Image 1 (tube, one colour):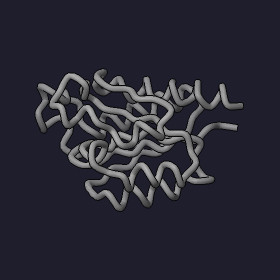
Image 2: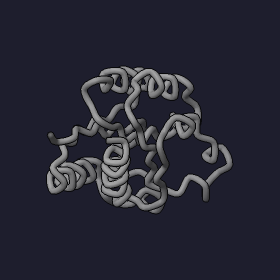
Image 3: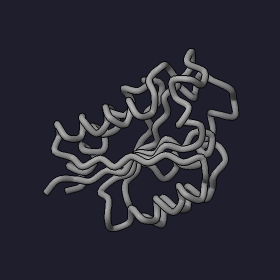
Length: 148
């Protein structure tokens, strides 16, 4: 049976390729999503990608993942550093999650060093740009394999 992974992208990630390319690169979100879907297909994994600038939509999608997705890869953007609601949603969903960031948040401003969601994720990938998405898919598959 093929695994199903949900990749969620939060605020401002729709602006990838335009917004601060010196930090986030020039790859657009549709390009990132296509790369993730193609990588998943090579691994026999169904990948569903969604993006929103709204915290509540992320919470709803995380809730919907319960019982329907095998794993969540979450680039929560700035909500990483502010959202207890996302942390609580991940707990409620009972689906393994990986926190993902394009930039190395630990080499940036101090406020970016705090993550509310890291506490409830199986791991964190940051600083590898768009390649972080394929790394996260592979890490999630290894996590799911170890759990079975």
